[in-house]
Image (cartoon, rainbow, N blue to C red; front, side, top):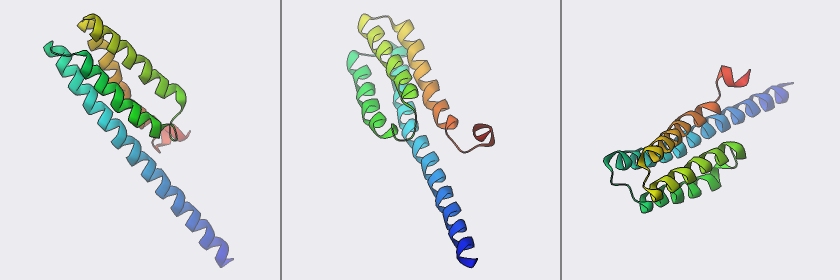
Length: 125
């Protein structure tokens, strides 16, 4: 009986530790992407964004998404890929208005996706 209680409490502690680590990891990784997207957004607003800036954000995202596949579904990752590709294309074409809009969406996704996978009551039920 005592062993069962100890094993149960150990399993609960391990799960809680995993949930806390996952939430911290997702927040930090998406925080880095958010900061990079904000920097690109500021450059687009200032009219000084280049294709190299968009490529730098894309390379950063490629590095991050290879590790995030473990924690979040492919559809959410593909959504950021899509908006990144669109923003890159608009920057290359010189259409900074649309590039600004797509970069804003990337920023919002980088803010909202970690919250979607955090351990909160509204996410559990």
